[in-house]
Amino acid sequence: MGNTCARDEGEDKHSVQHFKVGPDYTEMPEKLAGTGIKATASWKATITRAQLNQKREEFWRTRTDGNRRIWLAIKAAVEADAATALTIIQNNGLKMKKGNIALLEDAEGNTYSIPIFMINNPESFHKEKKIKSREIRNVEEMIKIKIRKSGKAEDDEFNILNTSKVGDLKKLYAEKLAINPDKIKLFFGGKEIKDNDSLAKNFIENEMVVQAFVRAV
Picture 1 (cartoon, helix red, strand yellow):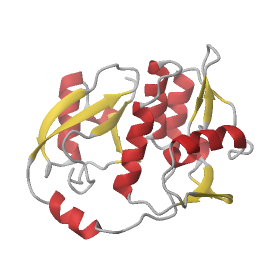
Picture 2 (picture 1 turned 90 degrees about the horizontal axis):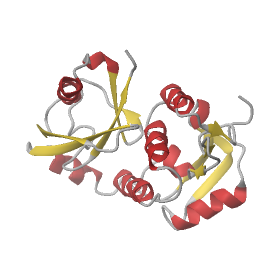
Picture 3 (picture 1 turned 60 degrees about the vertical axis):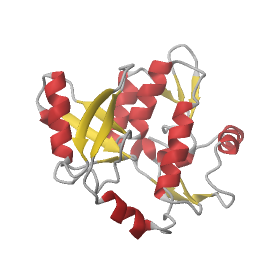
């Protein structure tokens, strides 16, 4: 694929300036993070997982340039594994200008720049208050989950116990789409979530968004 970490320094710095994840944010071009089209320079910062998720949601929420449908597809690709991401990029006719997902161009010539911290997690997360947060999430409660699918303007919402399995949520979504659950992959925080794990174990809380990738029949 060539140099998957080829970067336009000016453009990347511009993106990071508007979405700093911390005063000590540092990129390490000599070290790789991610694989395939999601391979980028590694990075580090003093940040918790929750804080990074909040920054990522802020980034997606404030994308006003370009095509909204394309942004939804890019978000799905960024939150998927490398192989699934490549399929999404190809299906939407996007060109990778750097050899990876960091800078894309659509058929109309619009460019879409994605900061590194949106694509891959840091070398490590700050662990302050981690135990306390986990205890809070273990309390059983009814929550509303939004499932977002690439190319679909509206999210689908489901009420479900936070102690329910990911597979239970997948079945609810499959019933709504009238398809086999095996055709669905669910992603949260940039990682695929497994059927046998609970929503609480994945730190999925009320009003949070889960990304769906549906395999073609």
